[in-house]
Length: 263
Image (cartoon, rainbow, N blue to C red; front, side, top):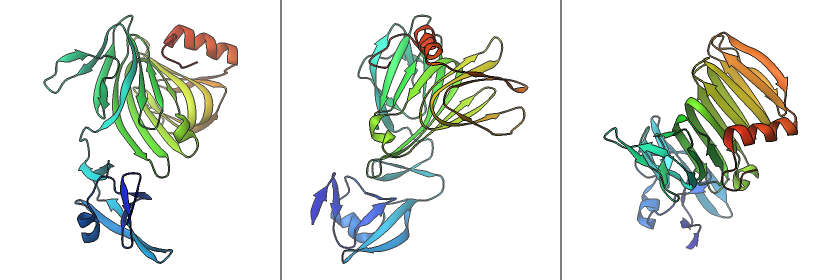
């Protein structure tokens, strides 16, 4: 038996969607998939039999386990914090975030008039949140074996920047941002999403990657590429403009400011 990345590599081992179950004793591996998972595929590799496990519906993988959906799991930490940056507590109160504070899925976050924060996720993807912002980090799934990631966030108001981490950039990352007037989906990517609750208008600055924008009003998905600005309101997509590098830099300075090492 050989240990690799904290897991067990042996004949008859059990694998979750391409990644060995992490932190599980060999007795569990020998018996089968962990609780709330099933074998969906069996492969023969180099004389070994590899069983691939998958979580049952309504469960999500986290660190070698299958947990019920909406169970908070660690997804990263605050790397740089400026001003008032708060995270909602289970009792409904709000607590100031400090540099190094652990962030969990389903955390609700908000920043004050001068508040800014940069979060580093487990795959080195970076969320940079600007002032007067309220958002919810819904879901983050990261497979360290394939470097594939999935992240979902909900913006209630304000602005944030999403930059794919160097680990995930080598493989695949799926980003999904829910806004009050629509949804943005992206792959491999660098963008800014802003929602103004006064006008109920969202503006998307698409710097790098491929994107799908679905306004809530129409339900129709449109494809967009890097170098575009997309504006959405309660009626649908109302404007598409070119995004120059100069315009991008001005937007970063104005909306996000210099936080951490993001450029």
